[in-house]
Length: 92
Image (tube, rainbow, N blue to C red; front, side):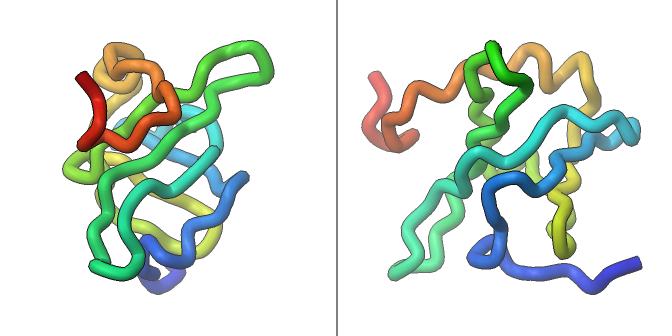
């Protein structure tokens, strides 16, 4: 198994996998403040026509080269909200 890496290294296109082993999509964007080392979460692309989903940092488990493993299963992932492009702290 690859060694864990920092959220700073997460790149667009990395696989996003759930706690049940299901592949949910790919990373669209890692969200946070690099200067303060604050990881807010991920925007996860679920397909060509679907809107990206916002995954809060507390739902992210292990990050390894090329893959992000979440602590939630497919049913929980499907209940997450869409990512609207605004930083989580600025949402109403």
